[in-house]
Length: 296
Image (cartoon, rainbow, N blue to C red; front, top):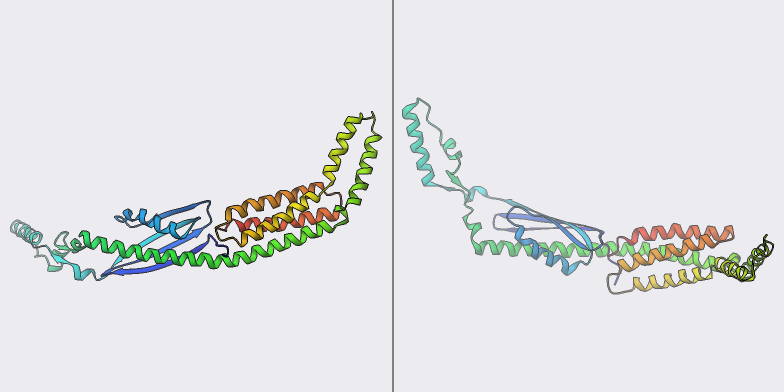
């Protein structure tokens, strides 16, 4: 299974009778699966089911989800409130009896609040509401599926970039292993020189202290352990790339281990060429760490 990115965008449109809507989902990297919803007033009750649908397809990522609703053919739903109209006409008659004013126009009367109603009674019906919610959820599922597909496509590009960084790390590690500065002869010569300095120290060191210092120098001069660990980390990363599950967290931890070994290699290096290799390793590892943050 290829790596999956946590970055993606998807949109899905839907309709039910005269109601139109569209979903938009934006996803970026996150430590876990988090979702923030922007739903129209009165539709907050959908959030629990929306989160359940989202969790079926995604494991990690910070998602911003919005729903936009619009009503079409509003005029066809308008209804005349006979009772309100009668009340308005009686009020107009009372006013005209007391004050000489021009009679109101029909448009003016209809514009008064309550005379015309938008016919929302159907939408408040439980069965109608349930049908709309079902259609909204189906449309949201389409958007989530599209987002998962977009994240998978982005993940393929991400895996190609990470694989390139990993091969560079492998090459730099192999170069460090082949460097004369990492060889046994070089380390032996270096140790002899350092021990000679210890022997000539004034005041003279005791045998126990001399043995301790020599052991510490041997550890500090030997970079083979760091090279072996870097090689092992490369193999582990390749195994994670081929895993059939989300591996973002483990890759992030492995990238930190890469960086730790590269730092130690630089600190132990006694030759400019080995230091240069260590710095090149750190540069590639930093690029790896940055892009690993987007892996699910």
